[in-house]
Image 1 (cartoon, helix red, strand yellow):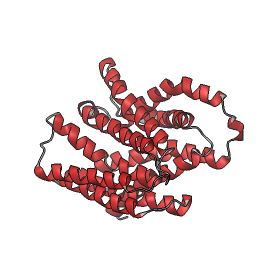
Image 2 (cartoon, one colour; image 1 turned 90 degrees about the vertical axis):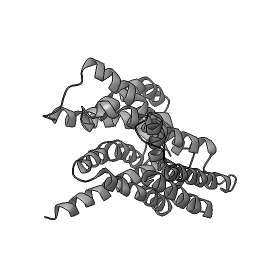
Image 3 (cartoon, helix red, strand yellow; image 1 turned 180 degrees about the vertical axis):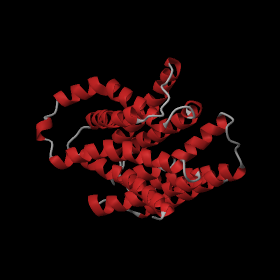
Length: 289
């Protein structure tokens, strides 16, 4: 068996799962309100990852102090990240959401520089300026009433920012605990925190009338992008350089946008294509600068 080929096939599968998350989200939002979908996704993900955590033999149990830190990191970094992503997705297009989530590495870079973990270089600064110019193209030249709203795009950007905060400020504690431990704490705590809202939202909607396809989409969001893809991600990080893994992230907006056109019938106008190329170019330059 060609092990490198299998590894890269898994990474492509991971990108496909993350790309499919946008499509599944759009389908699920046809019948679920955003808050209910977010609560169900995070709660289901917590239930799905608990058996994996229980079977992880070599895990280090968090100390009470680290558990508090994991909660303080995980609740905004995972719970708010996914909540804002779903709220934003309900008000914008797949292409907009995928491109704006693609700015997350730039947020990580800015926060790392502010904390003294990275050094800002002219190339990185230029890359960030180019990426922001791409966002301007995406927003300013989009025809009025076309679909994606400013509020939706802003919520997606905030989702990426919260994940960047989780990545940078959680660096110390993540070195001591596995990704399974980190995600278990975040998803279980998030599901419990959102449980009152989830129950209240569920009481206002007839879940029995939700179609099977929409339920499948919600379960897909909880299982594949939230659990399976992250397991593949950290599995790959242990075997090849992080730069190689991250390089595949540039395929996500392409895959997601193509799926949005093919499955949902979304339209890719000139501003989306031009803005997307500028954003991805800027993020690439900022990461490599």
